[in-house]
Length: 361
Ligand SMILES: Cc1ncc(C[n+]2csc(CCOP(=O)(O)OP(=O)(O)O)c2C)c(N)n1
Ligand SMILES: [Mg+2]
Image 1: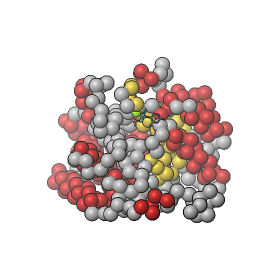
Image 2 (image 1 turned 180 degrees about the horizontal axis):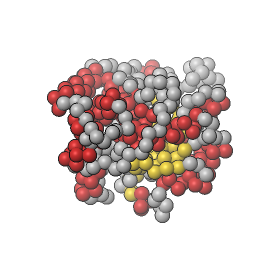
Image 3 (image 1 turned 90 degrees about the horizontal axis):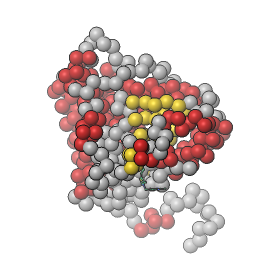
């Protein structure tokens, strides 16, 4: 995440990336300047590789029944969070749905506590009481992890309202899926957010499907950016397989929010390589479609940038990969050795106010 207190200036937008490694190497020559520094690409590689490896292990552990509940993987969508993290400040807020393991990781939450939450252990981010769908990190302004499709759209505007009311210049990043975009709450929220010019960025993580239902089967309006039009909300469609394109779009939207100009809607087009959750036969899509997106894999792309620019050797990249894999294994060990919450925890963290009048012994 950008650590400076000023938002980075939006960079020139970047065209679609080449699909093959050979093509990538060719076009990423030193003569072809990139919009970000070596450090940014190196951090993107680390962050995305951590998200990917953490979740690959989550999928395996879930099948081994090491933890229960639901498990929705983010694999394939990593460029969205990588791009965003470069365009925001640590004080900005995030609220998302149940596909939420990667959000705390990119914000810097220790993977140990994310894994422990999946395992339902007291050392988890929500003391083991939330599980996969309810990752929170108060210190890093992550407001969850929500299981009701579209529920967090209203929450996002509420958080932004509180910041505006307190005259604080934070921006809220409110994530939801292409399926959630069809919930009625979106319209009420868009209306209020535009009326009050709230500092919120509505981010559709458009992975083309809501469980097994494609965007095309959901509505005659398949161009989701137009959903902001009735409210005259500035909107754009963004290539979500490109961290650079996401970073540019978020930087512009965040600047608008901080200047008091109100919300932005971004239809960030991405793809999930895995099923909706762990029990999904994926009959609604073809292998060719999946391979097409895997050919634009953002981790491969950034790895190629690092090597083509001469910023890292293959051996250096392999060393980073080894380090991250070890970090994920350490997180699993930490989770497995952590205790479950005690029974009294059931009654704690329910109300903010300890003497809430309706809580009686
Ligand atoms: C109000 C509500 N209706 C239905 C569900 C069941 N459900 C869970 S996930 C999901 C699909 C949502 O898809 P999308 O918003 O595109 O997000 P994605 O899973 O693709 O990230 C549905 C219908 C739910 N959790 N809440
Ligand atoms: Mg979806």
